[in-house]
Length: 65
Image (cartoon, rainbow, N blue to C red; front, side, top):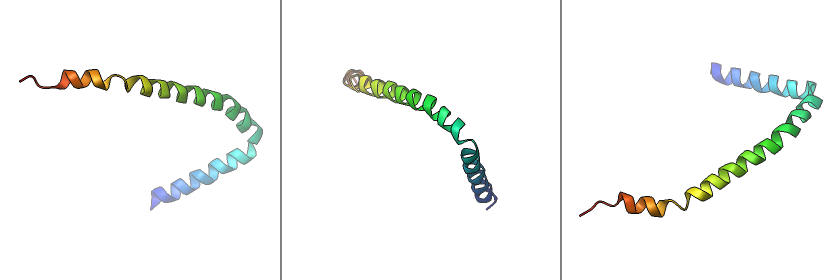
């Protein structure tokens, strides 16, 4: 129960901070948004490249009879 109350209090405090410092929040978003898009692209490339390797790792994991 205490964790719920703390969580609600922190959400209220965070919303108050966004309202009070909205111009600074927008500046933060202007810097964070392109960075997050680039990191998402890097993750997508890594996932795409790793999808090519299971065929080779499958051959390695076959038990030899």
